Picture (cartoon, rainbow, N blue to C red):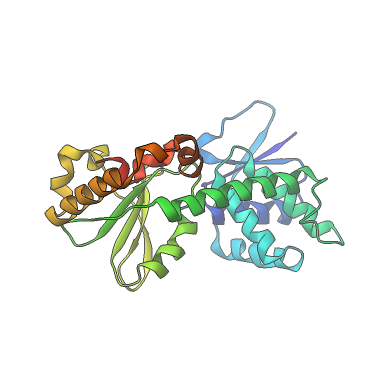
Length: 255
């Protein structure tokens, strides 16, 4: 019989679940988010309450066998939100803690290989968000940007933008996951707000953004159009470096 371990979907919740598995020496287990769990007649279930202390113990404990780089790969795998990634992470940790050697480059192990592949994909998405995020100045004096990345990379992007825009108040909001990170010149905090999709519609911009900002966006768009040399246009190469799914973030593509 498989023991179903349900958790709240947070990274601390996942680590708490792993603590529970080791504490009770569970072997046949499957970790799954509570929101998508479905009961079966043959499986037993247990819902884990997130415990920050237990999560910290697990995260510190695996440092004995898994390097900081390996731990970051595990975190990126979690941020991927790929189905079953929880059990891939559990398998990776189990192998890492029982092996006498470092397992982080042992790609004969399917969990190690999968974590490495997923982490690379998440890293690429993170770097693209670093490059493609475009801020607009709101009427409240906050530089605001929306994103909808394939993976939940906003926690990875936050440090980059804090360093780059340390003297400005800014908010990056993930429309797909309905949360954002706000920087108030002193610290960053995670916030949730109700946003309408109309915030990115041209007809509604004056409700949210300053006149100067709208004029700047139009000026930038016109510059982008006029500076392009049609005879040298290579759309295939352009799309390779800036895939179409990122165009919605770019003000120069929406003027």
